[in-house]
Image (cartoon, rainbow, N blue to C red):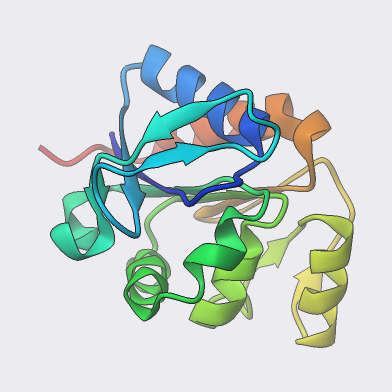
Length: 174
């Protein structure tokens, strides 16, 4: 499966790296989509540095079958870019798999795609989502149709397991 991982500086290192490694080990193709292509992005803990493969203006959402949104400060940075917001919204409009952990749903709030899903997120983002009328629970991982969400770094294993399971259920395009 072709997965777009949307990423900006100060992402949560483990929430990016561990799922990324598991997705690629399972044979999925993960492309780092940043605000600009070829930019070095460092996690907020400084443990992981990656380079964005492409900028959001260089690709179409239809180039990908799933969307991965790691947490940390990255989602807040990404949601200030309307191209990234539109890119995110398109996955929900088409019902493609979306995997968001920790602060990842911040991007979903700005894209206005949180309303019709049961989900979880980082504690403060849970409160934001509740105030907006979302169906939020405080659980390690929540799967609702095409959406897999988790709360924090300690939930990464459950998050990754459920994301991989969902991808097995969705036929990859050729």
